[in-house]
Image (cartoon, rainbow, N blue to C red):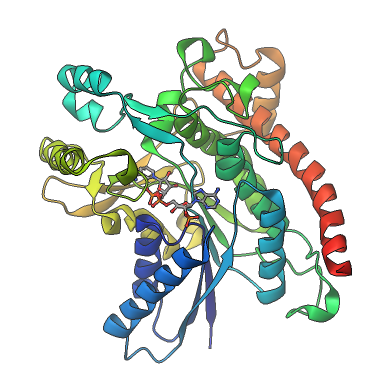
Length: 399
Ligand SMILES: NC(=O)c1ccc[n+]([C@@H]2O[C@H](COP(=O)([O-])OP(=O)(O)OC[C@H]3O[C@@H](n4cnc5c(N)ncnc54)[C@H](OP(=O)(O)O)[C@@H]3O)[C@@H](O)[C@H]2O)c1
């Protein structure tokens, strides 16, 4: 019997749960399915698994093969916690088929109501698609010294991806697989980066308010969430071909559109929340394909692409969950601004060296140079942390 293993970070959020349920629906009934959920807290994990179990009992009672759930608690803004989670995954799983980097840290702190009225009056659909009125707290350094949003949204996922494509770093006698060299992620595995539409707002040059790669940790940007999503777009482009060629892993870039979720509830009162939902429906009715509203529809792109053969996936497409005016879902194909032609490492090296990543460079060359610079940065940081955490594992084993 075949066995499919799926890891969803932040799997207890609205999108995470919908992705899990849709993958359960789409996996052949004869395939044993294991879904691993991550959260920072055990109660969130417990609630998520309870909901998923109820979903299976209600909809898949006649399934001949098992659907089972597992979890790891992890704080992506804490490298020791990431290291502990990785060790668990290396110990427990011979192979993971799908990873969805869905968790995200956003420092939203409320709404600038004046700015929201101004933007809504200027262009209502744009105001509820690329909101520029959400207030975000400044990024602070984590215990590890990195910017919290960069670490949780960009670096920790990259670290997990890199570690799981390499040899295992756990004691050999405890392993489920025969060889330490057998990676958890390998030939046939899919890795989904969950980006956002709003990443595009950071594609401008730094002088125009776009992502500034002199501040990769995002300490100085007021829009750290959007900037971290642009970093995801860049990093995916710089590494997708490499991951495919070197490890056989298919990296996919997905934006889920706009949907109701736990992340913005805390910043809104009940009237604002209802008003926002009404505005979302109005945007959809006016023709916006991005207002999925329902997390189930927002999960469409990941679910559809997870069931798509790897050779039919374009590494340089940004796939999006979309709906038409009547709420019928479909997967849309987009490109990342400045990287419309994909990513060529040699060209990017030259762009980076010749023109730099400043405002003087054309958008395409600048973006390719930025993607390459970001890749070099996270890769160097990966090596630093791999070494530091290797010592951490030894210490833990001694106890
Ligand atoms: N909502 C939208 O309209 C929208 C639009 C575009 C893109 N997205 C993207 O879609 C994904 C899901 O979004 P969502 O709105 O469903 O968010 P959500 O419900 O808030 O779920 C995200 C989860 O990430 C986890 N998380 C936060 N910080 C973490 C950390 N430091 N370490 C580990 N986990 C952490 C949290 O889980 P715990 O608290 O349990 O740890 C949180 O529940 C995100 O990547 C988001 O950027 C959302």
